Length: 142
Image 1 (cartoon, rainbow, N blue to C red):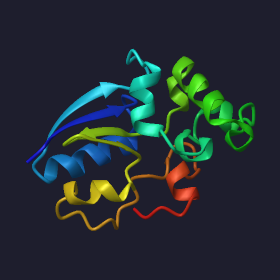
Image 2 (cartoon, rainbow, N blue to C red):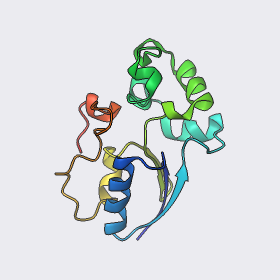
Image 3 (tube, rainbow, N blue to C red):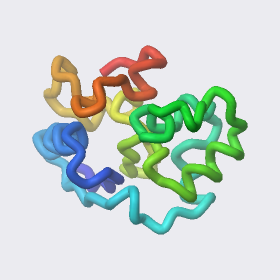
């Protein structure tokens, strides 16, 4: 089984569900607070490099929900700079496992780590915000 670094927002309902799935599959998790982690551009780029802002930003972040930030109107560099300053804008979770840097729980590279989880439970849609995560809006599978 794998050692997994799981960057999360502490107390996130879906983060807790996601961690339970990974633990049930036999993995050891090391949770890190995504909001207080000392992000560098290099570290963040390992997760978001090559993505469009709409595919790497947290749609449930207050500034995005309010329309103050519109990911579709940002350049990649602008989005990364904003996420470095305000990590709540980073789509979660970020997962480091076996040399992979994975963003979001629907990334297909995560499938081998999900054990017997059948994907039937929604662990992506934020129950507090009643909105879809960026993964779901782009048609990602659960």
